[in-house]
Image (cartoon, rainbow, N blue to C red; front, side):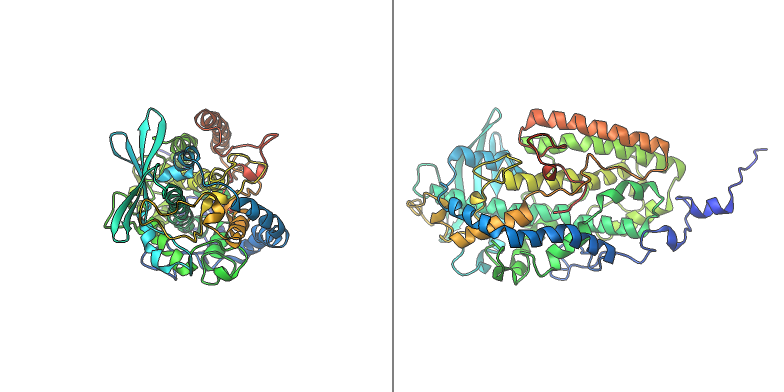
Length: 507
């Protein structure tokens, strides 16, 4: 007869797998935070976390909020000087235009449509086209490229409804510079308001529910918690704060560079989360389990290389959980709660299928660190006349967040457009420089991803943490071979710590 092992009552009450742990075993005693429907567009956007724990708000105020205030008081003179330089910057030549559209964060929008033909489609700009500020303009636009070997070439820029009829602009047309500006505007707005919000806001539900529904001694909590700092308070400030570029008061601030008020601009969030049913192939709905890392482009290939270390690490954690607590209560509840809030997240049954828990955890960690941080770094440094310099902030001239000239309606429109100042006012450019310094550029707070450690109580998992760090370093070396301007894992003599990959969404 097998003798049953006796577990002391005190151990039963504190074991991370005990299904009946008391509230004091949870970070906030099961009192929240918790996702709620988005106040602005509850049916079309990811749920928000509206009630932020006070300690997280205090931490945000002392770090990120303080940086915003310092920028508001100390950066205006520099922003003004940069705006002057921006205005005299030439419209990007074709080689720089292609570099930005195909070898930066903008490559997220490239889709192979036939053989060697690729298209970046910004047709959803029609969503905000009629709600722009007075004397500012935007327009639905797409770009057609050909790919020969590994080299993209821009062939044409398409305006589907220019004065009621399609307009195709090519390199020899007088409208070419104006067309390139509109294409870059579309790419900028898609980055800021279509793809980037999908990295932020669906992850808030994972963040909040992990803190509220998983015991702090659980390996799931111990793994994800270091990647949840700052984010809930930051996202709440972005969505609901008074000093944000996505509220209706933003145009009256010093730092809003956008072409419409926040409520209208946020309609682009809908495209990134719910997609467009009339163009599902171009605008698919958000699916948690299908993050973008298209290896057809260098940028996507780098994201894919970095994903592997996360999956390896998370597989070890998932294996321990499944081995020591099959059908774990807290994993099941966690999946049930999140799947009811986040599109594509596996439910309480699917979470126990082979490899699913590991993938779910890896996607979250990779999303809030590598994918999010790299987008900011690329948007600030690559979409610029001087790209890839991590120590000297580049000009923001080529963002074109406000354009003062209507989109071309014929091939001859815009023959006089030579420099950025032909399309944007000094105030527009000043605001863009302020927004770049405050919101767009990377500002990583220690510890970075590589410096992050986990409060595991298992030697197996502590050993896996070391392997994870080693694997990240190997991935970084591989990424350097693919792209020399991808965000770095660690600082060096020429690369500031603030530009290294963050542990969490913190800017």
